[in-house]
Image 1 (spheres, helix red, strand yellow):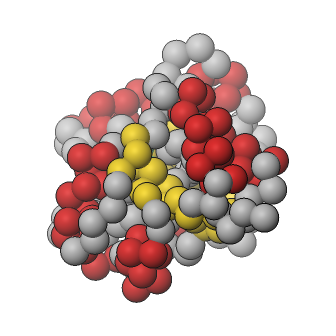
Image 2 (tube, rainbow, N blue to C red):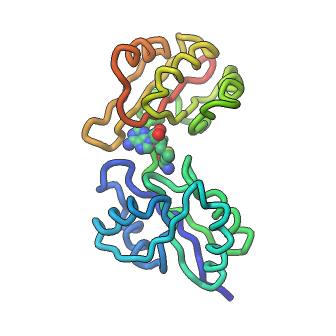
Length: 226
Ligand code: SAM
């Protein structure tokens, strides 16, 4: 009987103080840390005073890495999975390994911790009792279809976007949802220059057309009839 387990460990999205005490303890206890970018996670571990073997696991190798990692888990190893920032599996690698570990009968746990969409949603001022997480929209094929599918969405919508596509995204949302839809754009969450801008989609577009978007964004859009 294996005592292996997989523990997903959220890491800070900016402020290093956001790592939890339990996350640090778990990082100390596991046999190895499976990391999206071993340099990024290596620096975090060093900052925390934790020394562990790091295993690289990212979008370009995750398919071929999964079976070897599941074998380690079946052999009794305890593995932590971390991404560069936030919660693994949330617009980051994680799902494939979680699914394979569950199928192999390995206990899987995800610690509560940092993620960008929760603070962005809560500070948006838009209803957060029901929401949909859209993550990144496809960059090319399927982008328009995804936005069209949001046209009649009544729940608050959460979208991740990079700075150089912000103006394009707001324009596309306006085309389908209209310029009057309430929305917010949060950047640099948990960092020194954290900022949330609230207004209609039209007002946000006007702002970001004249003020170059900087930093990674979470865009929150009110549902239909909000
Ligand atoms: N796993 C992460 C999480 O749990 O939120 C998400 C990783 S995804 C590759 C990166 C995206 O998350 C960014 O493009 C941005 O949309 C959002 N994000 C991450 N950190 C952020 C921050 N400090 N402020 C605003 N958005 C952030």
